[in-house]
Structure formats: C-alpha cells, structure tokens
Image (spheres, rainbow, N blue to C red):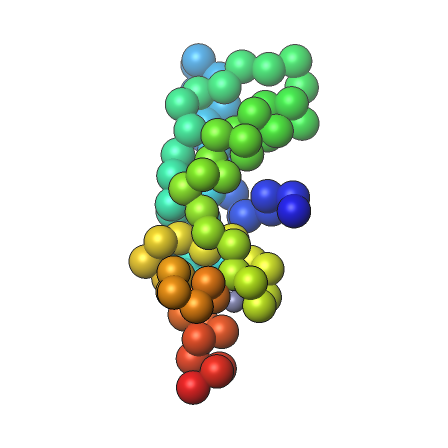
Length: 85
Ligand SMILES: [Zn+2]
C-alpha cells in the first residue's frame, strides 16, 4: 500500500523539508530533516519512507491517520468509527 499522506514542502538552504499531514484532521504528524536528492521525486520518496512509521492506515477508508485520530482496537480512523456507531 503506497504511502500517500498529504504533505507540505519547505525549502531550506540544506535541502527540502517535508511535513506530512493526517488525512482526517489535517494536522501535521511529522516533519523530516532537510533532504538533498537528485530530483524532487527522489526527495519525496525518501521523505515518505521515513514518515510512514508515524502513521496508521485506516482499514476501511485506507487513509493515512495520526495516532490521535486512530482507533487501534478497531484499526479504523475516528471518522469511520463514527460512521459505524
Ligand atoms: Zn477511515
């Protein structure tokens, strides 16, 4: 399953920093250190592989979710959980 959380980009003198956002709350979940790569695609791939461990994947809607918007027992996001009730 490809890691597809939304992100914001900040260019710094040392490289590109990526901030990844929760798909449900839109809040920032993690920010990478500045990344230097040969292409923007490569930088993004590196950033995604580092950020993925900070996210949970909802088993119903397949979105990428921060810990505080995820029900670990049901393995769903709070939005899907609300729809189930
Ligand atoms: Zn969900």
